[in-house]
Image (tube, rainbow, N blue to C red; front, side, top):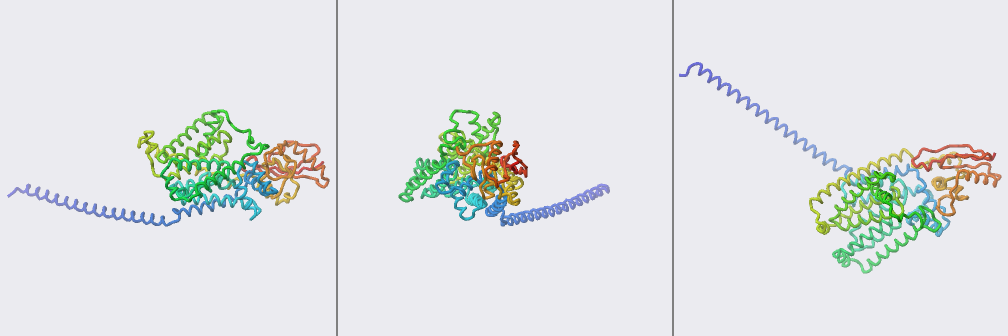
Length: 560
């Protein structure tokens, strides 16, 4: 028999061990319950998340038509609010006030643009004789372009969204009614039906012809696209064989004739007459000597088309930095497209053609060099039609790892460009809602409400008075022409005048007509001269607008 203290401690130890085991068992049960609850919680969360994803996928946000409708509605609000300026209404006035078809063609010659936009306006004017219909038509062009882009382009949802509400799409080629919106429409249509070239080139030829006759820059882009088709046809024997086996007998000849005729017609119209001095006319305004600063400035337009910043041409540092960034993006894009030679050819050729024109002739404004951006989008779009080829990579011994690295950085650069475009588009669109682009509509409305639109009006500078003539639907007396007029042609019949010359003409007009006691004078700059034999009374000024050259100042001018 064990001693008492031994039996006590043995019993106590067993009791404690049993108690500890019960606690451990209880803890295990609690832990199992907690794990069960946690699993149930995660299960509920997962189910809830799946239901949310399933529900939101049914919402229209993911539908391209939802974005298209939103874009269309906002665009319509924006364009109806937009106050048009001279570059928008001058073509309308040319169509309105040309006395014959031959006169219309002759006037278009001085504009530096082909006929498509003017012919479209002529048809629209037969429907409604109001420039508002031009704005609605322009809105329709951009909406059609965005619709094509959403339904047929290979870009992802985020990229499509950013592009659609970017600067050029949501502002420059939407609110400002010019012929440049045609470029976006015809380029996107070209990319959409690009695969039809395996059977026929006729559809692509028609689109290239329309694009060539939309604007001078449209002609350059059309030429680049035509060269791309030609390069593929000449160097891709498999494509050529497939085309000949499926196409009609005269398809190739007809397509070539359509393109050649369209190019000739466009070049003929945009070639200015001998007495034109718009942008230097036919003989002047060309840069034929080597100028490094001007060359960097021209490359800076590529940077501007991507990032919406135009480098200061007087600052070498700005030019060099923007040029390096533009070349870096162009290099990334070229390497990305190196596995697809045809889109690469388009990207390089299109940029070189536009860059050559930018350097030799006209550095342009955003609406002009925005075509660099369209070339980028078109090249990436067409890349979706081709299988990857290692011909160029093997030729230059490029490592696959390098291509992967470039693809990553190109994606970063592309998304940065799209985000910059998006911010620029939202800002510019919003600004136009708050601040009128031109003071023309506000001035015209004041004249109509005050009954001043029926007065004899002397208006100068003539080029800046086209919006008033368009909104008032009447001609004005232009001192630059010394006669009644509406649109402006920069030819020898027009002479710039100073404010003293304007007052001299007004004095003569008052003397020639005894029944004319006073004249309404409208200037785009404040009057800073006076005459002792004339009484000049300021009426009102309109200065709240974006374009500083289209602020208007009204004066009564009487004989003393």
